[in-house]
Image 1 (spheres, helix red, strand yellow):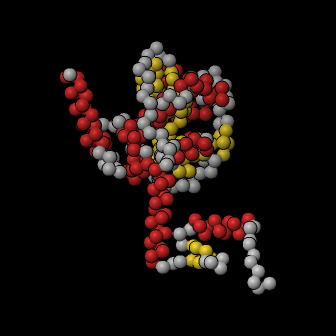
Image 2: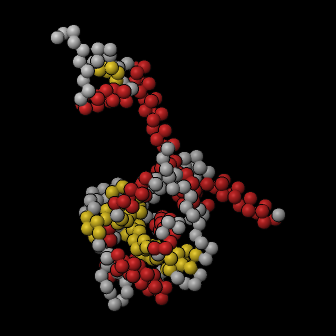
Image 3: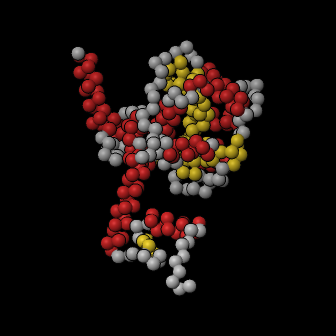
Length: 298
């Protein structure tokens, strides 16, 4: 029996072998024993291999890149009151009711959001003929005074004040056209200018994954998801800090450049957003403006 050769093809054995082949510190000796190499050379080689794998994963990552421009007959508008405000509320209301997010109201507005009218405003993409294409509402204040404050907070990394993005609605036929990106950028820039330390929202979990994975926005959960206004949603936050913006600049540089086009040169300097991850926004803008001037002369 001592001279017999035993070949172990059980699932457990195959998993152990696969683990050894995938780990730079593990190897399999001729007698079948696992060997763990913790010498300095092996440790350095393992670190280099891990760094190479990470770099390969980053290079293979699919990111959003630069969003599409708005159509020529679509314009971004900021709404603070009047008849246009009522039209924006009616636009959101009709979409919310159709999706089961809100109850019917004779005032044609989402009654659950009415209490925040005084400390919010709309940003809307509107066609030349006055048709609403999409909206986002920015609501300002401390966490406990925002709609998101209805969720128990478990993440306190981002201090008050905050800006909540709400009523993010786009006409169905314009889904995937870039309108949503323009609305989000307008809401983010508004929150930044109002001194918000973080952008918060109540969103579906799959949207949370898209923002983090495709757009590389460093959103994190603020609390546990639960049922709210017609569905299960999760409260999330993204810091407006240089550190957060640097992550976007590193992982999704063209989206970062496009996002910063919503700011003036003075604002870019004031918020410290230039030269994040080696992207010189101010030099790029000056070069682009010079090229536009040369083209205009020709």
